[in-house]
Each structure stands twice: as structure tokens, then as C-alpha cells.
Length: 121
Image 1 (cartoon, rainbow, N blue to C red):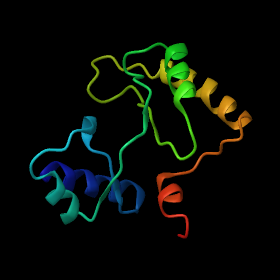
Image 2: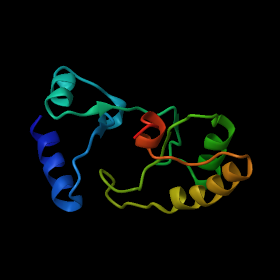
Image 3: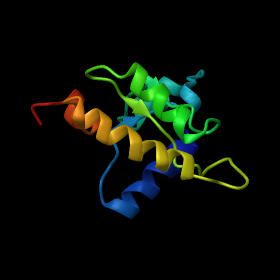
Image 4: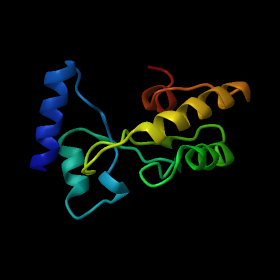
């Protein structure tokens, strides 16, 4: 709970906005997670496609995402930072350069989680 509270405070301080969404770290929920989520007023959101971009090269990331995408999907990609000793976001960046134009060409459009899940706001 303390980590989530500190994260909320840091995000509010940096952006002036209070987060409303929470993706469980590593997609794992544990005892007490729901209570922390409720206490902080956060709604849990998961992904429907994960690029596995922390382990794959750009071509494989792009193929994985493009071969699975359908309307309404939430795609989870990472920026290469965090727990990695020597972060490298280049494979993800290159994959996004391939993914976005192809999905746009297929008629998809991109929305934030808020736009996707709360279309009337």
C-alpha cells in the first residue's frame, strides 16, 4: 500500500493529475491488492496483448502485436526502464514505428484507456 501511495503522490506532484487507473505490476494481484486499489480510488486495467518487448527483438514484437490485434485491444509495451540494469528501449521504439502505421492503415485508431473505457467523458 505504501508503494502505491508514494507512486500516486509522485504522479500528482509531477502532473497535477490524480491517476484513476492501475495495472498490477507484472499483471500479478496479491492479498491486499484490491484493498489498496479501493483505498486509492483506482480501477484495475489489464492488457489484452502483451508485446513481450523486454525479451524480443523489434521484428518479433511487431509481429506478435500485429498478428493478434483486434478492435478494443489494450496493447502493453514497456519503455525498457525499471528493473533492467542496462535499459534499452530501442526494440520497443522500432516495433512501435512498425505497428502504428500498419494498424492505422488497417483502419484502427488509438485511444487512451479513459477514452476506450469511459467514452462519454
